[in-house]
Image (cartoon, rainbow, N blue to C red; front, top):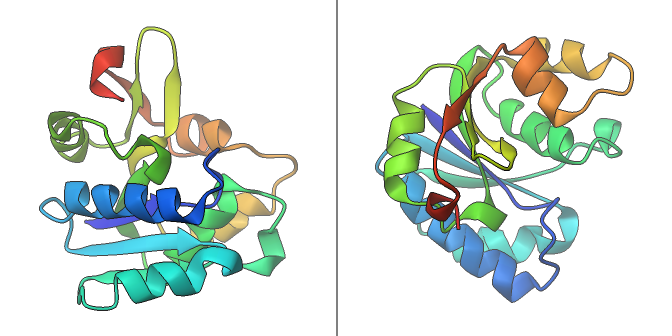
Length: 167
């Protein structure tokens, strides 16, 4: 399984906090994933690349300009471009890096799921399979959103967890 950490669309704008959140996210995924990809914008790329240069199973990738108006979807696309064949992904937004590890363990052992609390759905904490071509074909569709990809295209179902286990 490939861990894919999203760092671009976070409400956190301080690069030190983004790096700190990403470090926590990597530690959460390292025991669950064979490889970890960190999707970054160009502004944060070098800082993240330097931070994780000593981790052989962690790669920092930059967003693709072809889909730069798609935010989270562009982050996912940057990741799937690294492994073009169909692969299993465990998606984690760095903003939610403090999620309890048991939630990620449950998610990793459940196919086609995203995390949901009684009050919110978290489409950027998900487990699914996709390929570069499949995802690129999806991005060609009009006005798509992360929830459309996760729910409608990937047919992911919610994995219910208490709100206290997310933050």
